Structure formats: structure tokens, C-alpha cells
Figure 1 (cartoon, rainbow, N blue to C red):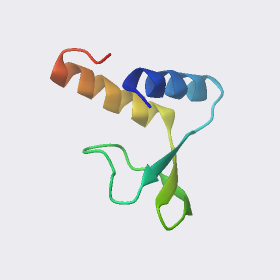
Figure 2: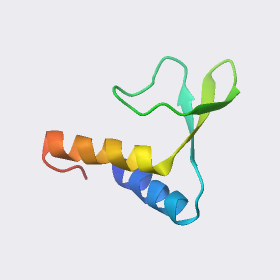
Figure 3: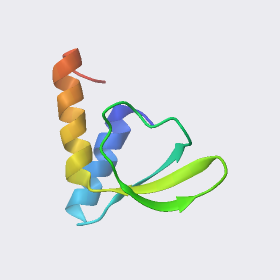
Figure 4: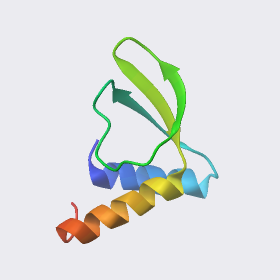
Amino acid sequence: MTIEELKKEALEAKRRNGFVVLRVPRGKYPKRFPRGELLEETEKYRVYGFMPEKILKWIEKLEKEVGGVK
């Protein structure tokens, strides 16, 4: 998933008053990524639910650091 796709997903979740649900490989949590609620755990992956506002804030910080993300 690209940053733009994640941003679109977060905006849609915010519009629906929902969560962004992501499957993250074990040990591969992105640096400074917001913490989410652990929903499910398997041998290879963890599934988290994130508040969309936290995702959007993380993307905003990332865009400022690198001068825009595409």
C-alpha cells in the first residue's frame, strides 16, 4: 500500500467514523507509525485497527520531513 492509498483509506474511514484496519508483518512496524489496537495475531502477521486521525497526522509529519510524499 502506498502513502497515497493509506491517506485515501484514512480519509474514508474518518468520513464513516470508522477505523483503518491494516495487516502488518511481525517485526515490520514502520518507524514512528501510530500505535493501533491489536485485533488479531497470526504466526506471520498482526492485524491492527487505527484511528484515522492518527494515520493522517503521521502522514502529515512524513510529508513535512521529506517535502511531500507521492
